[in-house]
Length: 317
Image 1 (cartoon, rainbow, N blue to C red):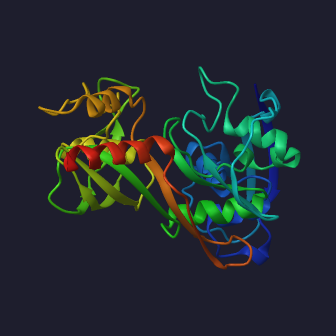
Image 2: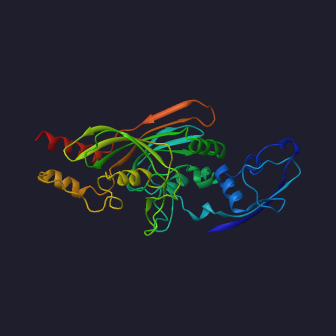
Image 3: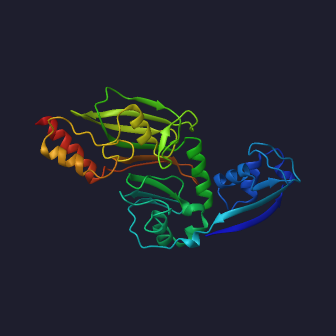
């Protein structure tokens, strides 16, 4: 369920010369900056009855009227789902998300998600938009995620994501042998035919993925990737666009390619690898309150370790 909110504020003269989004974020401090910007762009937050752009400046005395629909987090239930906590303090939480855990409730996954787990383990987090979730991983992608425990922390982390200060590195195993590293700078948007997929399209949003080769095998490559942007399915789409789709990616790899002459153990491994071989390996950010530079790195999950071992054995044999 959602609820209608209707609030108004008058811009004080002390804020004269600041941008609409900056002023609104201060006057409506209980909401995240990204949410405020969205309401300004959609016209749900008007200034003196007019829709302005977020970057326009105000000079004091203007009336900000917010009339919007707000998702009611009370519709989501708290569930005792275990969390693999890598780091925690009063402001942030870093978790190692397992394969199969959906991050946020949506159609088909209304419970059993990371958000449901956060509501159980941190009862006060419901006051933070999206219960502190500032970025997501696909259901079948494992690895590191940061969660904000306060609105102040979330606003800062969202800013770091948007300004590309937050570093996120992944490891993946792709089909095909890549000759070297590089970067993909191709816009990503919703697929023109299959609306459940993303694709490289001219009208998409800018997306940049850097990659380097960690190890080459007979028919596969182990990669380290770094995101500049955070588009939906970005790594999966970009690697498929290059012609090197991720092992196990049923959406973007099509039919699994079976190497000619592959041993039975390798064939069994590839056919049984039931998710995209992608892991959020490393996370670096500035602490949203102290400003300290922080970083974490997590081991690959067992299924990817087994996959790499099987590929090595195949080459050795």
